[in-house]
Length: 433
Image 1 (cartoon, rainbow, N blue to C red):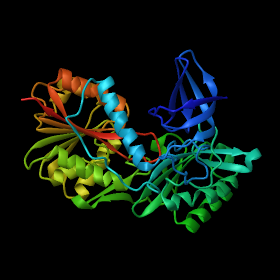
Image 2 (cartoon, rainbow, N blue to C red; image 1 turned 180 degrees about the vertical axis):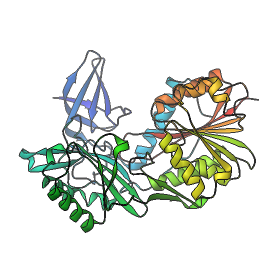
Image 3 (cartoon, helix red, strand yellow; image 1 turned 30 degrees about the horizontal axis):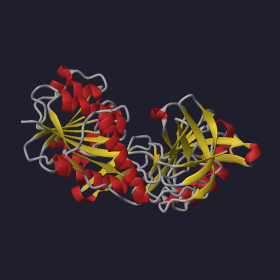
Image 4 (cartoon, rainbow, N blue to C red; image 1 turned 90 degrees about the vertical axis):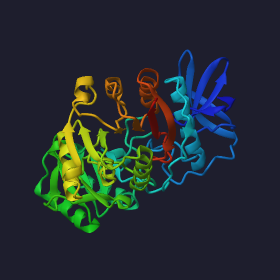
């Protein structure tokens, strides 16, 4: 065991210290603290360590609300004041933009905040039957482990979902196929909750009765997923679930299927859409592309401003859902949707969309490198880029700024996942004139 002074936090929320020329990453330690720790992994240039004793605590240290924090791997920052969490994430964005992309935003945008507890409306819980731990486990993986955390609640999940964990464990433990259920996907809409059970073996009649009773008692819906995500179908009640969320500022109601990708934090998503639209500033009559459009989260808001929007998505199912949402919100006349592989698109493919005044990009963690490399000479005057990975944002920013004639006008953090090290951000790129 060694005593160390913590200098900073890394991008995963671990304390960083240095000793004898080697960097040491300590779980649970904060900048300014003195800690005693012990290494659990040693490499030539660095070590990973666990905090054994807090000698001197930081003024920014908070008492974790969740009794499972430290064991469960779902959160990594509950011990840090939430304002300091946001500052840390802003620093991550700025550091990556400079060290990876060699770019600096002209303006640092105010952080987007929202609820810090009970915010999460989507999750994929792992399920494991472990007799030595009393039966069924339902939850996130343990920290640094493939084991399922022994948890009975979750402070970042929507309260109605947190309250379901303990009774769901008991119910799934009663099923004959309890050892053949690897996961439960949770999807919460504005007016209902769906639990998608991944099953590797058919249910018996007794199993069906148990699940029906649970659904009725707790006012949830069960879907069954015997194979991939496309195989998910209603079990009880038998009708399709009407899952949706709203964007009241734009008078929008967006429906989604239980396995569709949607933002997990509905409150922050509303603020993010508002911020993105203000930054994009679409004008009536302009042609705007929304790349990686999903179910139309940004597309329909842009269309509500009077622009004509081309939503582009790699999934035909999501593109169809977006088109249906456009029709339901009376925006079919202002939108069109195309299915394209944006990870392999070239200049001809992007050019086929036609001339564009503005563009919004909201890619997954892999980023949008093919898109930014394929931008033609008459590229949009403004691009708003929503990122869930600062490293790929920085990589793509380097191409836009150093190779495509844009400047990075602004960038800022979006605290979509409080108490985790996940960093969401928004950036604005303007064409140099």
